[in-house]
Length: 397
Ligand code: MCU
Figure 1 (tube, rainbow, N blue to C red):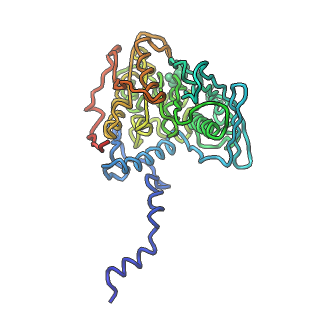
Figure 2: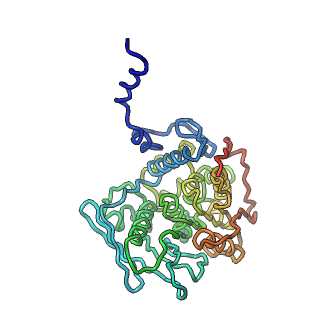
């Protein structure tokens, strides 16, 4: 008679080895199509199959799953590392050369290096420019994101150097293409001499459309130690569900998914089928913060511009903050909202918030980054019971 033990040993020969099983952690079934409607912001702490996420290790798998969902149903695919990336640095300009699948592109990144001090310096990658105060002892890398993926209007679909490499039919929207470009800048910094940048102390920032892009870059590029998202609004720090509610139930003229995909090419065309029923999406943008976690994240917003969806941003990101709380890094994610100023003009009261995050995450100094503030202009409020039907676990530090 065959013992149970020998039966199991024989059976194990047909099972995938453990390493294989782990590498599939958080991957999506190839044919998965969302069908369940959920008016609440989806539970960060529950896998798609309903299994609870109870440890930091399980969260690592869950964040893979979330990243896969964002790519499949909203942003498009981030290509794996290209076959070759190299750089050169001269006259303050980093040149990045990339080859993949027999094609090549090259782009240039001007670097403003601190005038004093010896370096290597921490640096911030300015995604299409920066409108936050960057200390003079931090370098700035000026990333011309439009060169990698254009963002003028619908005619920009598939335009830019990313698409010269991966084809105009690549699924990526502009934001994933910019994320790819930022990853290649970091690849080039890692292998190029002379630039005097400390590649372990890099941040990213951007405002408005480029703030949406900074958030996506922070979410998908783990080598970024700090992500500063300024006035990104809908499609960035706002949640699709809450923005729909603001427009449809509160009659506030705010940007929704339905509008945004008609305006520009920030998203993949794979998002189009979902914009009219965002409650079927098994994710929303509170989970974008979860992809940045546990790294530094500062979301700066404007309560005075309805179009940006200040209530959506506040509710979305205070909910995303619960992921940082679960991971025991609550003060690594700050949220600050002020009104009465023009778009992308940082009010002086918020400058210390930016300084604190840069000091702590790029300059290695201690700083109080427990910052969660809204000035309440525009009655920005958040009725959590409408949006959150799950509890926040404590995974420990
Ligand atoms: C806040 O970001 C966008 C917004 O999504 C667009 O609807 C509007 O046209 O432009 C904003 C922006 O990028 O302003 C510079």
